[in-house]
Length: 546
Image (cartoon, rainbow, N blue to C red):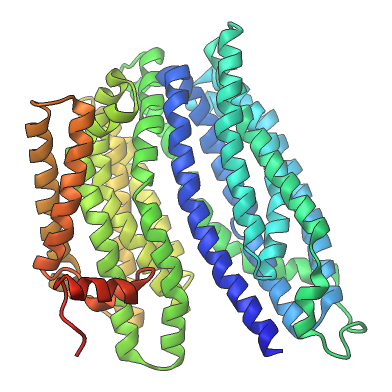
C-alpha cells in the first residue's frame, strides 16, 4: 500500500515537472511560429490570423478552463472513496457534455464568422474564423480526457498532447501557408490555410489522448483504493454529477475566461477606434497585425518563467498553513514574491530599453521598427503580471480562490475604458493599447495585495522584496543598453544585441548578490535549490548557513 502510494506521488511530481516544461516549450514554439508566419503573411495577413485566434482563445477558455479541473477533482474524489463505477460514469457524462459544448462552440464560430469579422471591421477574417472553428470540438474532447488523466495524477498525456498541438500548429501551419501562397491565393485565404494548421494539430493531440485512454489500465491505478464494497457501490446519478461538475467549474471558468474575453473586446476597440481617428483600412490591418504578432508574443515570454514558481508555492504554503507555522508561511510568501520580482524586473526593463534590436533580431526590420515603441511601453507590465501570478497563488493557498475574480474583473474594466479613451485621442493612438494593459495589470496587482493584507494579514517588506531587485534590474538594463550602443558601433546590430544581453545577464547575476537582493530562502525555492546554495557558498556569494 505504501509502495503504491509512493509511486503515485512520484508520478504526480514527475507529471507536474513535465507539464511545466511543456508550458514553457509551447510558449517558445508559439513565438517560433510567429517569426516565419510574419515573413509569409506580413502585418496585414497576420491581422486576419489574429482575429480568429483571439476569438478561438476566448471560446476555448469558456469551453475548457474550469471543466477539466472539475473533472479531475471529481474523479480523484471518487477513486479515493473506492467508487470506480462512479469514475466511469463521470467520464462518460462529461465526455458527452464536452461534445455538446464543442459542437455548440464550433457552430457559433462558423455561423457567426461574418458577425465577428464585422465587429473587428476586418471583413476578410471570416475565412480564418471558419477554418479554426472545428478546433473547439476537438479541444473539448481532449479536455474531457485530460481531466480524466489528471484525476489519476497522470500529467504525461496532457503535456505530450499539448506539445503535439503546438508542433502541429508550427509545422503544418507553415507548410499550408507556403502551399497557399505558392498557389497564388489572396492573403485572407493564405491566412485561413495557415490557421488550419492549428486545427489539424489539435485533432492530432486529441487522437493521441484517445489512444492513450484506450491503452490506459485503470485497474493498476485503482488498486490502492480498492475496498470490499468497490464493485457494489452505487454511483451518483448523471444529473447530480453534472450539477457538481458545474458548481466546481464555474468559478475557475470565470476567472480564466474574463481576461481572454477582455482581449477580444480590446481587439475590437483597437480597430474601431483607429478607424474613428481617421486611419485607413490598410493601415488598421497593418497596425493590428503588427501589434498582435510582434508585441504580444514577446510580452508573454517572460511570465512563463514565473508561472512554475506560482504552481510550486501552493502546496508549500498549504502545508505550512496546515501546520500553523506562520513564520514559514510568511517566509515562503516573501521569498516567492522576491524571486518573481528578480525574474520579472530585469525582463521588464531590459525588454523596454532594447525593444527595437530584440524585435529586429527575429522579425522584418520595418515591422520591428513600428512595433518597438509599443513593446517598450507594454514590457513595463511584465513585472505586474509576475506579481499577479504569485499573489493569485497566495490567495488560492489560503482558500481565497474567488478573490482574484474580482481583481481581474476590475482590471479588465480599467483596461477597456482606458484603451477606448486613449486610442481615440489622435496624439496617443495605438499607444493607448499597451498603456491600457499597463493600467489593467497595475490595478489587478494592487487589489490582490489589498486582499492579501486584509484577509491574510501579510504585507511584504518593500525594501527587501522590491527595492533591491529594482536597483539590480536598473543596473542590468543600463548595462544592456550601454553595451548595445557601444557594440553596435563595432559589429552588426544582431550580434550586438545578443552579446549585450549576455553581458547584462552576467552583471545582473553578480549585482543581485552584491545588493543582497536574493537570500538563501529564495534560492531554496528554485529547482535544485539546496545544491545551488552549496555552489554559491563555495563562490562566496552567500554566507554559510549558521
